[in-house]
Length: 274
Image (cartoon, rainbow, N blue to C red; front, side, top):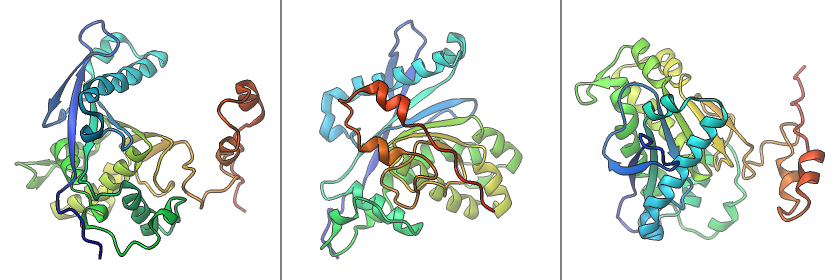
């Protein structure tokens, strides 16, 4: 096995308030997401790392939250509702030798998939414990999920109906590595629920209430038990052109004629199984 940094990964949770009239709102660090009521949580790509972004991190948090607010307004969600809904943005902190690509490769392998980044790890002796099970996933479970499905400091299960209602109010927006984060969080949540005493049907019922909107997801698609609405992952070679033309899009440079891009590359409807 490769000698790796023993330091753990970590996640910081920022709450963004839109009580004022500013498009980007005001942010502050928090240890816990709201345990009741609707919440919107952004799982960004791996670029949200305080070691890399430094003083720019707070501004980037506000920018992402502002974009989510913009999307809601386009969807005719009222300003009053937006002000009442807590927004959260996650940033990641990783040790020097942690590879997010290798962490994703392991998740693809677990689901019998291959990943376009797999060649990057050729010659590597093994994967670190953090790459196999990042600590920040457990941290996000405690910060976001645990209070909605358990009580008495996470020691006792909540009844399944209440847990399902609580999780139906959670909407996650995931970009790139954020989709990996969401899928790993679902995995950790499932294991934690088993330990709390939830049966298989209850776990499935609760997780089906969660909604994830994934943009350019860096995770295997079609395996989540959550309501995951996503654009195709170009890394997942198991999904072919019957699902969409994302691989065709990738062959066209973004600098080319945008109207040609939009008008000539339509999504294809999946073929029905006989």
